[in-house]
Amino acid sequence: MSTILGSFQNPKIDYHPLVSFILSVLIISLPILIIFFILAFIIQFYKYKRLSITKFGFKYDDTILLYEDVRSVLKIKDLIGYSIFIYSVDEIFPVIEFNLETIHEANAMNDFIIQKIKAHPTNPPKTA
Figure 1: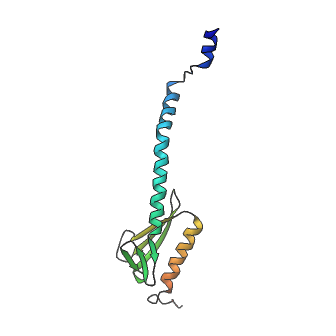
Figure 2: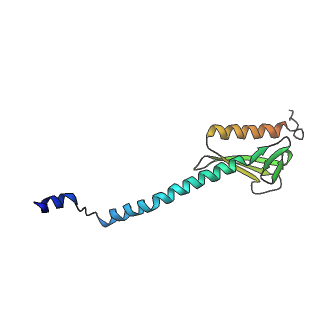
Figure 3: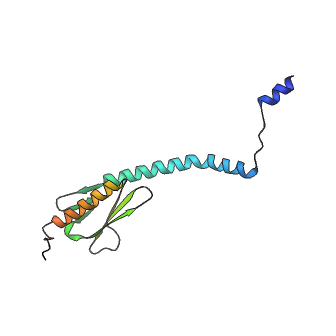
């Protein structure tokens, strides 16, 4: 009688080798993925807080970009959200770049930057 109960208490499940490999990879990689996404969120949050808009231009860490030096603004959809790039007149690569999470924030920031550039005294309104 003890042998019957013993077999029910500890059942042995024999998985296919491929299934056991996939399960072991998932168990190992899940904490790594969680840590990666937490770090990505922290980096994105840190980058978003560094941008400030002043009376004369943009300040991003030690980089100051005046409104009259802005060549173009580009908004791109990423995996995490939206990235906005601000290009200078004499640079090929963006001088300032930052990430936003929603389309509403990205559109508002893009329109705000364009309006600030157009409203600057060095950029008079164009007449027909």
